[in-house]
Image (cartoon, rainbow, N blue to C red; front, side):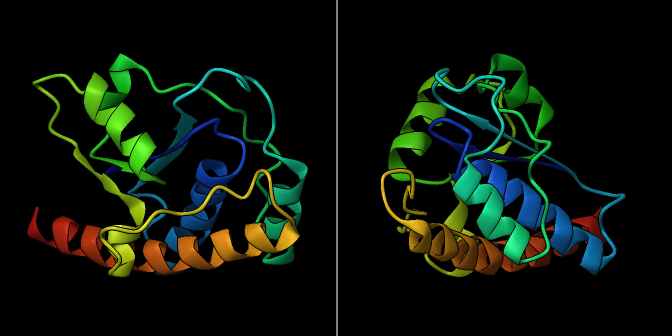
Length: 157
């Protein structure tokens, strides 16, 4: 199973989701069965580490995302991943706009796995530190729901 998290620049929300989801998979005993990655829609931060504030917030929760580097969604991602999960509606629209006809991935808003199918993970980039904490709270809730979904799919395969 392969999961890709997508946000605008791949320096705040999606690398945070990647880090949290990896940690949750480890705790659930599924780390060896699920590949996780993140990327952005825009190219502004390619090759850069996650925002320092995102790193600090994740570190407070025992998660190290410092080694991650930003990249952009590309055509191969549509064929490689089983889940392509957007942080907000604009990201989802960009993913759908580039989606090839043969894409079999589940493409959705990430918060749909937290029982919030119409909600977005807010972009904390232009706000204060508390925004990064809120983002992590939302990511944790959605991660648990996604793990439940993946467990069901793996059990059925």
